[in-house]
Length: 160
Image (spheres, one colour):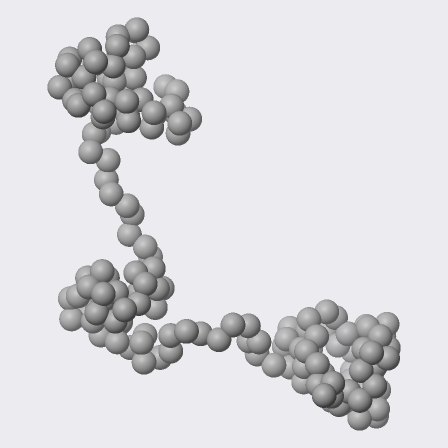
C-alpha cells in the first residue's frame, strides 16, 4: 500500500529518516526533476542499498482537459478564418481556452465610446460647479453617460 510516495520537499538526511520511519515498506520515491538533481549522490546510494529507488517524474499536476486533437482543430479553424467566438461555439470550448490553445493573447475589451477630451470637458465642467444635467445639455451627452464618465475618471485615480 505505502510502497511508493511522491515528495515535493528536498531529500535531506532528516527527511529520509522521517519518510522511512513513516513508510517502513517503502520501495520507491518519486519527485520533481528539479528536486532530483539536488539530491546528493550518497543519499541515492544509501537509499538504493535499503531497496528504495528514487525517480524523477514530470508533471504530477492536474491532467490537461484538452489534448493535441483540440489544439489542432482550434489552429485549423483560425487558419480558415473563424473568429475565436465561432470556434468556441462550434467546439464547445470556453473562449479563453480557445485563445490559450492557439497561444494568442486575449484581445482588449470594448473601446470607450467617448474620447479622453470629452471626459476632460465633463470633469472640468463638474469642477466648475456645473450640474450633471447642464453638462449633459451643453455637451449633448446623455445624463447617464455624464455620470458614468465622472465615475470612471474619479475611480481610476485620474485627477488631472
